[in-house]
Length: 343
Image (cartoon, rainbow, N blue to C red; front, side, top):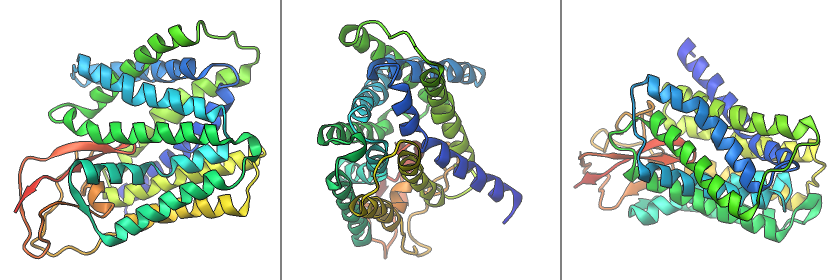
């Protein structure tokens, strides 16, 4: 393994580990702040750091529709997710979040009329079955059906937003877009929170304050940066596999630090979520005449949609196809490109 690849693997591993801390850190920070205020703080701090970076790159994309997309896609989904985390266990929330890549793939398949291979659909079914096992595996550790339902609703919102990004990214710098959307998330959450939650609570202990700061920096900015670096040096199919670390880290943190029970049914559900993602990422070897992936803006060499077993409708794998202008979309929290082809 060459040096660049070792560094990429290290960065991707670190990103997966850091993303795995978001649910535990949110649970701790929610002791101090209500769901809306935590969303404001998380994305406000992240935007404050990322916007100067975007300006230094010479990118200005302060547009109303980007702000609105961030307010709904990031801000709205995370407010709902935080509300769910307050009502369920860390383990439940972390394992449920592991289903996001599958939800993205399913929504992309329906929305963009992509055709999934049988192995991919089997993987989707296994992961969604695992979600059902997790939610049905007991309510210990503060878990509840209402909390699980809110987390699932937030995941559907987030996955839909992820697929919709394809209409916003073409011709724009992804760092600048992310910075503006983080700002939109903070502003949108602030408007919602002032109406529904009033003023923020005064902290009574340093722990939740530190957790909130860590959530914004170590749980948001750092993994985005590390993942972008790693994805630029390995194929996205490989990079995407490191996302499987996130639900495992969160679930283990819930068991070890929050005392969440780990019933056999829940463990089986968690393994099914991860196994289904892995199965859906298996790709068959393509012949030399088949469509080749275009280089992504963050450096991706192959589209993750393809890694999830998706093929745009109308493609004949035996005959291949010619490329037309592609448009990117963000899968999970990574940037990928959607293939648009003509026969």
